[in-house]
Amino acid sequence: MTANSPAMWVGIDLAYFIGTVLLVIGLRRMSSPSRARSGIWYAGVGMAIAIIATLTIAGDPGRRVLIPIAMFIGAAFAFIQSRRVSMTDAPALIALYNGLGGGAAAGIAFVELLRAAEHTSSLRVFALVGALAGSIAFAGSFMAWQKLRTGMRRSIPFPNRQVVYLAIMVLMLLVGLVLASSNTSHPVLLFMFVVLALFFGISMTLPIAAADLPVLISLYNALTGLAVGVEGYVLGNPAMMVAGTLVFASGALLTRLMARAVNRRLSEIMYSGFGVNENERKDSRKEGFVNEIEAHDAAASMAFANRVIVVPGYGMAVAQAQHKLRELTQLLDERGVQTAFAIHPVAGRMPGHMNVLLADAGVPYEKIADLSAINEEFSQADVALVIGANDTVNPSAKTDESSPLYGMPVLNVDQAGSVIVLKRGDGRGYADVSNSLLESAGTRVLLGDAKDSLQELISCIKAMD
Image 1 (cartoon, rainbow, N blue to C red):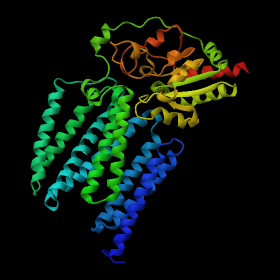
Image 2: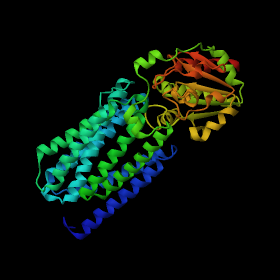
Image 3: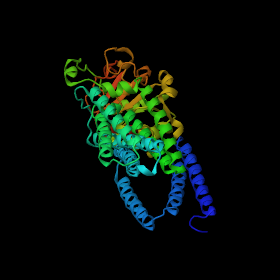
């Protein structure tokens, strides 16, 4: 089979088709926790087939050597880093890798725009869209990674940022029009376009507080998919087009669902941030008295209950207490107590963060339910066990119109027969407002590190046997 024979191109198209089908199957399987692992393998094999097909048609023999070398170096680095990262730091790593995908797509766009004479004006427009989306996703995801890695809770606002956004967009539009309408490359203008897009991504992320980062990371994921998809169109690569389009569509839908989960428009999140400033915090009411509980009393309340609903939050992830929590619920199950896990859509630092942690601990998938599926069942529960969650269970979101959380759907833990909260902080979540749940008459607080507190509860329940 010669290098450019029709049979070879049929084989290449067939490889792209098989790779695309495997990718679609893989993404579909990832929608279920029980099938997610196999979905990753399907998608990985599909992408491997697409990469081999692309290498086959690489005209320059040097590319066939350099590309695998670069892939091996990147894969080795990612493998080592992912093996070392804790589950707590996984959101930051995901944000970083998502940004690298956007940066790679932007790099492809940059190269293609330097070869402007080889493309039609419509392809140059698509390349510019890819450069814009990829650069914003890269810079924004990098800043999100920094915020998550350093634990930066607060937003970093700057004055008149909406004017800055508008000015950058106008400049990018003007530069983009010049680049799209010219069939010659303009390296200086192209460099300016990319720098403006990078700065726009940074300026988008700085004012966003940690509570809204899951929504923003989801948006950047969609932008990365958009960049990959349009660059696949520019290159005539079906696998890139399908993969990018799927990621863009799913990321955009997830962003919408995440924003709805906190009852906020995306424009509102980007405009106003989330939470109060330091002056507002000084003026807010002080926390009232909380009813503390000893470990043996909390253990007895759950051991003799009919049903216990567990609400994990980011504090559980910080304490790395998911395995102890699984052990506790197993003991309760053995005693005939019905247990379930209630997950808020924005619990943790990324979409699905709590689900990943619980799956890592071996919690059965059928015991895990999201807010919409379980919220009406709290009134039937004897005990609601809250571990490291704060804003997502704050009743003020339903009653206090002055609260920055007002209107955000929260888990109805206050409707349970009793509430046991494991906490060690001051009762303020990422929105930086006090939690009225902690002052409720039906709430008991077990102070201390979540992992240590769970171990105490486990020991107390075992002592009852």
